[in-house]
Image (tube, rainbow, N blue to C red):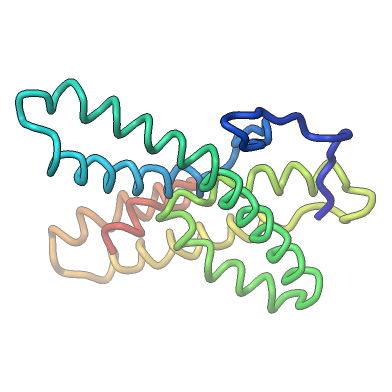
Length: 189
């Protein structure tokens, strides 16, 4: 997938480190990794900071330390991983055709659980922007088929079960999955 880069990317020079001034819109991986690091840093700080200073120092230090780590290491690294993921999906679909589409449909549900499906919007926009080259998009049609399959399976469970509690969970989850919101069907199944 071609990424439009207009000239050199401007950088910040902080303590001798060159950090690219890039946005992380549509990126989920940096946030996931940064929140994990923030939780670990906060728990680590709680072991050393006295309880009398905990409310004041722990949040500020945890955010500062995590922010430095995120902007210098985590952000650029996970951003590149996100680009590789998008390029990999395009390669899979372009080279494997319907088998690649089936594999993408298979892995789409785990992406929804982690929230990483939001990163597909950037890829989708690029595919639509280059419609003369790409021939259109494949992501959301396959995602829609995945949603409908999950909704159908959840409704089938709802119609076939005798358990009132399971029926009460499956029926509304199936309807919302058919409308594009599959998290209830995924989490409760």
